[in-house]
Every structure is written in C-alpha cells, then in structure tokens.
Length: 251
Ligand code: ZN
Ligand code: FE
Image 1 (cartoon, rainbow, N blue to C red):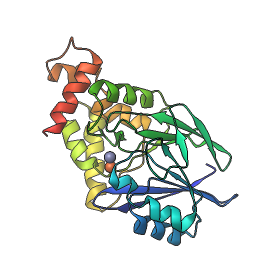
Image 2 (image 1 turned 90 degrees about the vertical axis):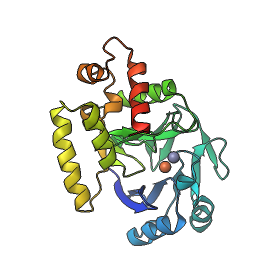
Image 3 (image 1 turned 45 degrees about the vertical axis):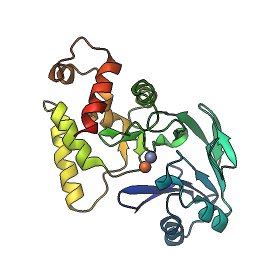
Image 4 (image 1 turned 180 degrees about the horizontal axis):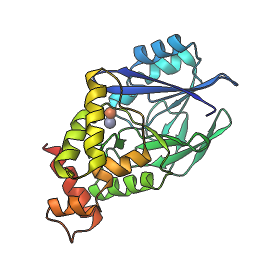
C-alpha cells in the first residue's frame, strides 16, 4: 500500500479516517463531522490536510466542515448540493489524490446524495453510512430498491477490498444478522470475534467486501436459508432485502 490510514473516533459511535502519502505529504480525510476530533487527529499524526471527501449531508459527517476547511485550506470534494464543497462529484467520476485515482460511487438509500470513495490502487473503499460491518444504513431518503442497487454496486468490488465505514454499529448489527442467518458458521464465528473486540474497546472497522459477502445479511438476500427463515423462498432479491431492512428497523 502506498498510503497510511489513521482511523479515529468522535461523537457517540462515528469513525473518521485520515489517508496520508508520506512521499508527497498529501493527506485526505473522509467527512468532517467534528472539527475538534479531526484537527486533533491531524495534530497527533503531524499530517497537513489537503483534501476533504464528504460522503453525505448528515450533520454527524459535515458539522465541522467550515472550521476544518478554514484551519487547513483543504479542497472539499462532495455531493453537489452541499455548501462548502469546492469540487462537486457525480457517480463514476474519478479524481486524483496524491496521484492515485479515487473512483466515486454513488450509493443512494440512506440519503439521496450519498457518495462512496474507492481508491482503486489501494483496493480500499469508504462507504459512509451505506455499508456497515454486517449491516447497512437506515433508509432516510431513498427507497429499498435504491439501497439494494447501491449495495449491489459495492458487492461487485474485489473481495479483498478494504472497507472503512462511518459508524461502530457492529455489535447490534451482528445480533440482528444472527437472528435471520443463524445457520451461517462464518457469522457465528464472527459474532464471537466482534463481542471480544468490542469488550476490549477495539474497533471492528475496517472490514472487507469478502467478509461482508459471507456474513452481512443485507448482502445475502439470495441466501436460501435466510429466504426460508423469512418464508420468502420464491421472493426476488430486492423483496428479501426490503424485508430484512424492515425487520432491522424494529429490531
Ligand atoms: Zn448519515
Ligand atoms: Fe452517520
């Protein structure tokens, strides 16, 4: 890997990430939810921020943007309608960070403006509030169909792709996953690993696309055991996904 990654926590369960190239001294951050936490992470690493990548408009991802931009002079990339964005991005657009291609993947569902950032040469993606460890974002603005299509886009990435998401929701997500996919040996094992990590105060993020394909019920809508458990053996993938999302909302 060309870049170094520094993940840090803020708010009740948010993750921020700094991405740094020591050869060029360029540094990017994903989102800007809390200026104190972001500026502290920059101070701790000694890195100077050059780019800010905004995933979506929610306050826990954007509240510190004006202050961080003012303090660092970084260029802001993000969804078109969000104030403070210098370079507005669309689906499948590519921009450069320190010479590396960052591929923009639009993943509407949690919000309509959601963007994910895929550094192809690093096989690393930042999924914001779309794909979580063993979970997916709540549908505040988009339809189940949109979220389903968004997750299918992410499922097409190579299995070894490293996934950084924006929240530590893993323990609850794992418990929900077990409730619908209890015959899944990888999931049972992963639940134990996660319980152990969380009890030690350690992060469960990042994950990989491969691990999510094995254990994330929101990517396993075509799994026969899950469909059977839901009484939906003849239902379409998007119908199963919709049901899973509904069940999780009241879990
Ligand atoms: Zn959000
Ligand atoms: Fe969030």
